[in-house]
Amino acid sequence: MARPATPRRLPSVEEYLRCEQASDVRHEYVAGGPYALADASRRHNRIALNIATRLVAAARGGSCRVYAGDVKLRAAQDIIYYPDVMVACGPAGRDPLVEDAPCLVIEVTSPSTDAIDRREKLVVYKQIPSLEGYVIVDQDRRRVERHWRDEAGHWIHAEAADTGTIPLPCPEVGLSLDDIYEGTDVEGPPEPS
Image (cartoon, rainbow, N blue to C red; front, side, top):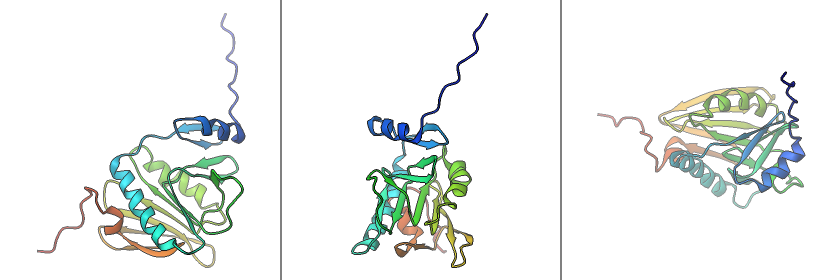
């Protein structure tokens, strides 16, 4: 007769953080479950670096800190993500590996993360009190989705495709789609005839 399966205990946030420091593979943590991150494509990486480079230049000399890919974000008590690009402008927290209060988060989609970035992460990120903007950048076509909090605290949504400039709240700067997709094989709008 078979014995009943013993339920597997999920790791606590503290156990996850300890294991993550020793791991060669990055994992996001959602409600007790660690989820391995897939490798990024060259295009994905180039887009994230284009964005981070422009944000670092805009933040230079100010109080904002720009992170690209390797700093964890505690998005909720039991949710930890690795955003592609993140900006924080308030006082730094005590944990040098985790940011708790970003003002801007940017995710570059990939085939395996597109739905998560547009649904699950959107819902979670909107709950972060310090967050002023969340930007979702499509890696396969010139399309950027921007969510931002207005002065009354309501979330607003807009999209840009092909051309245009995306205003960002912190640091206050505009990123053109040409800047975002520079050096990639993602085609721009057709030339006028």
